[in-house]
Image 1 (cartoon, rainbow, N blue to C red):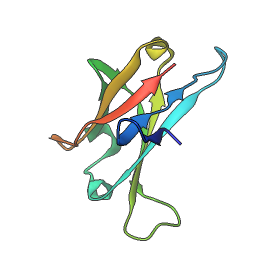
Image 2 (image 1 turned 180 degrees about the vertical axis):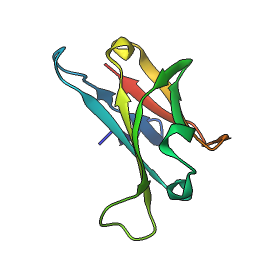
Image 3 (image 1 turned 135 degrees about the vertical axis):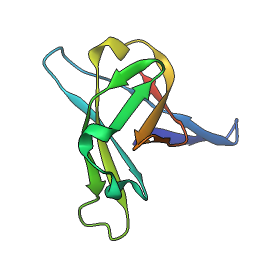
Length: 103
């Protein structure tokens, strides 16, 4: 889970993501619709703030009919940034931002 409902704020808030030891690799899995039809993985990108992140997969989500999935590697340079918006861009069309919290 990357979010929890805060009763006081009456909204979902991001849970801090721990990137772990230096040799760990952490991926953020985003789910949505429409990006399985990308022209090529090279035309799928992601940004956290102004930093470009590596997208390792963008296609149909396994075991979820009609749902698409994008796997994004969270770079260690994000450590300590706190809340930051992530945007997925597919063939030049940007998604709505997703706010994450990096410990």
